[in-house]
Length: 268
Picture (cartoon, rainbow, N blue to C red):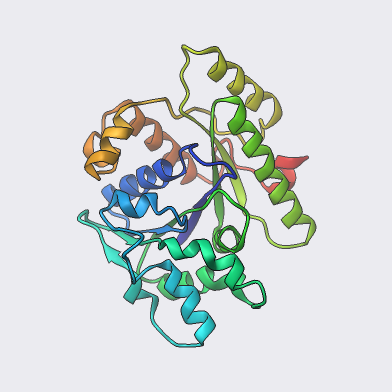
């Protein structure tokens, strides 16, 4: 099973859209795909019709099970979506309390990795939607994945979030922990605006070794897909946003694709 995480230390940059779109594409291609919602806001869970305030079988339970030393198969927490090959391990708003609860606990950085190891024979891909804050949830997502996608909205404030994310990866690397290879993904690009064009140019100048070769365009159809709860590549496969994510997926599946970098190459 391949595990990819999608993270940035800023909200509203397209993390959930990226996970849902890539998940929809993988499922449409016949890959058994598991989506994990690690954001306490539960946007992806809501996308698929689950209420993060009311869902008991959730990712939060993984941490409760670890603390209580119970043996509960993670399969019991997974929800089938109405789409073939697409399943969800949803969020709970209680995830927001984890950092405070686990401050004195050891071994909580690998909870998600161990759960995915138990599921590895049942899924071809697992995609993790991360919260925008550095904490136990993001640590789990980074420890579990083999590749990290960092969406960056093509506007100035989002670049600041990217800089924080890069500092986090550098800090993890200095602590001699494993850091996954990563791809920086420009999102919500609008070639008609000076802000988008100048931000993309900045990304190309500073992060050329790890920047994806294309962009995800701004597209109102993503909002409509969210409203209907149908991933855009399933709802409208020929839409320009769908085609952009299909191009991204093809590159992620190709080891030598442009825009894949180790942490050393990306930060140097």
